[in-house]
Length: 176
Image (cartoon, rainbow, N blue to C red; front, side, top):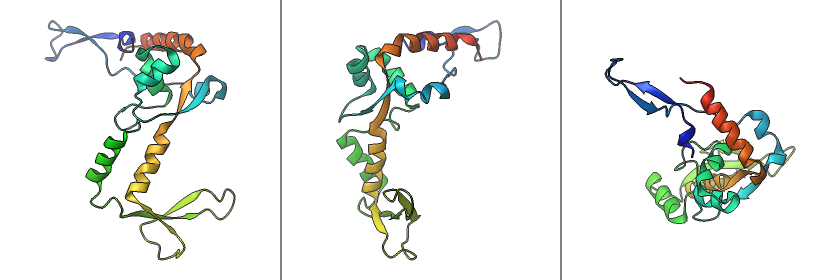
């Protein structure tokens, strides 16, 4: 469904216009308009559960796993392997591969002193100037990033037909 809307172009790997093929233009991209993204009534928030893929989420919400691209597009995810939450075994393997010491200091942080004091400020890899700074380990840092990835937005199912129609229309508008 997603790739069927991509335009087709003539392509010649040799630069010869007589020797060309018709191929799908995979470089064609569109995004969700800022005005649409800012309309909170079109979206619900969702916490991705352990092991859920975009296909599973799309099937649960829209009744069709083929709409996984809507889940990814609405959340500006262009790389589903680094922009989507990892399973626990994948996460542990990732952390152990990335860091020699997962329990080592990633950075220190302090609470913001005015306004919303629950907001933490990263002060770097040393706490020389802030004796009361909290340690954030490599593991905690990566775990926090995964928690952010788990919180996604989902398009209200009632708007899916309209969204798909607009997507197909925009994909046909111009050819690179």
